[in-house]
Length: 452
Image (cartoon, rainbow, N blue to C red; front, side, top):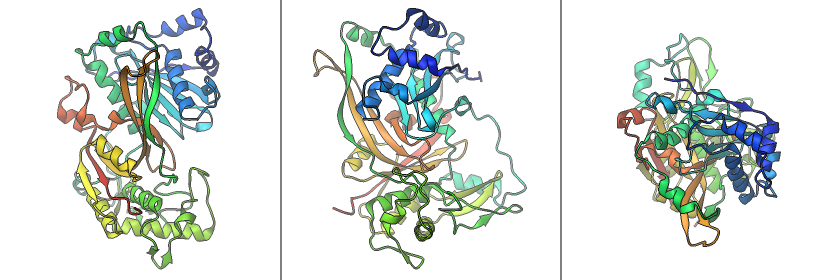
């Protein structure tokens, strides 16, 4: 497999390029950027950054057009990463990865006009690196510290969810955009002709702003979430994480503040108090000892109702649960019409969000076995003609994901990134089995709003 190629560009270049949204771009500088891109379908970096600037302006992240310059630290180009590509295309850029200042998030932008979406992802915390797009080629090897056998591990991951590494999120975004470029039959000529004499802008049609205000994780400072989890490992004992399924369910229950009252291990839960810990308002808020103890007991309580199992395999500690156990947990806690559905159903997810209900979602990966997270908002927008707002060239749905990693990678992602089994344009070079080896087993849990 050909190694992904990256180009790191300076912050000074970004200032020049983003400024070009409002002013005439220096021709020599523009050519120097384009010369690094040999693909006729390439989108200039200044165009991509203008799209990002418009998105941030529409969302209120910047107060003026061109204000994204204050957010951007650096960016790099991500090239193709598939061994099925033609030699001429192997080094063609497909994504621009743009890091914001102070690790306050990053954006993944389309670098090829065969990709229908201009914005693939915009996150609210963390930064992305070239290594996050490198294919995972190393085998997972047993460790002397493992207290689970490989056979036990394989049985667990075949139907359940352990923990996904965050770099796989970025690899999934890359896989999503590559499907459009790998498909030889895809032709953008009609799209180009339709817009050649017209200018367009994005118009938001409908949205549900982010619902969940917590940014919880599986461990936390001083075992904030996993204080009461068992120690695992045969030699080097370590507290197991509370598990991604538990954290996803716990954030949803805390959001609704239902059931109320709730007593966990002899302590009545004050939802407002525990939601101040690791919140969007104060991402590192450690709160007081009483609230921390309450949160730890709440987490292990939810983990217990999710029937979480713990262990150590391949040298890593795990918290494991089946999605069906998450469904049972919601039912035990008094939620009605709890539905576990296999596959990715965008319309059902949006309907749930419209009703004020964040959605539990999980997927299984053939690499690091899968993850569960929360979908808690969306944006639907149309690309409309300036001269005729009724003419829509294309539409996009962005969903907001809370990954359960203390805010890392949380943000808006193109909806299609998480439905590889329902590709808009199927990739003829990959079999269904090969696709399934990356991400499969999508499922969602929806329910009736308990407060209505």
